[in-house]
Image 1: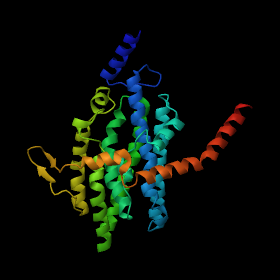
Image 2 (image 1 turned 135 degrees about the vertical axis):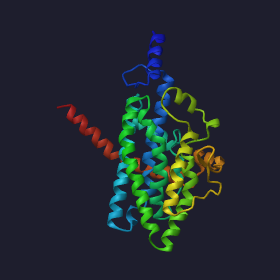
Image 3 (image 1 turned 180 degrees about the horizontal axis):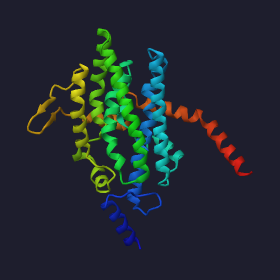
Image 4 (image 1 turned 120 degrees about the horizontal axis):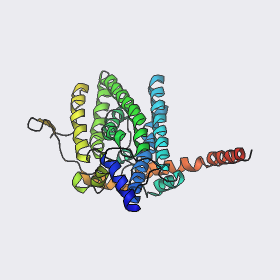
Length: 308
């Protein structure tokens, strides 16, 4: 019986069809999907913090409204993704527990500080731009609930990227001090943005299997190259210099060459030794504890309704 189920699963993947929650799937596929979706959900929730830090200090009511809307979108993305993980049998409370104890990871990019308001624009441009490169192919992921969640998430991330770029264009038309802020933010977020795609293919333990299962459509290095090719012309239009003297167009490859990422730094951040790791987890833990009464009240109200 198991052999028949495995053959049906393999045929579904082979014919590029979707695996749905009711379908049989190997335990290893289920665990891989839970790990990836949970990490993605955690990233959306933790990712609210760096920009949320600037809501009270936004320079205008318009910018404040834009930033509030964006942070709210990120919260929604996290909820979509936690819901997708629950279709695989994961428990949301258990996932949160694993996040705050370090048993599950989130994107390394969110462990860097936001030192000026220009960081809000650069996060929109570079961080959300990298997210779009990484996530658009996930709209065709083999697991149905994940792929469908990604459709809406990618539409909103695309809007966030345009918002960030528009903010930077406005600042680059401003004062020398504003232009310097944009350049400084670009210098600090460029390399961490390249790290967002994960380790190079030759040291990525999950890429081969995830691609074989149709979870991923491109390798980490392919997506990183696509991001560089997309971003270099945008930087030229914006008028900022990317902090990599090795960036140059390669006629033979039809792509941009670029320098080597400092993977030792990436490893340290992933291990919890980044500039803001402790701060991000401490804030998430406090928020979870402060919201305990809300969860308890909601459960009590649901139980009361169930008794009627």
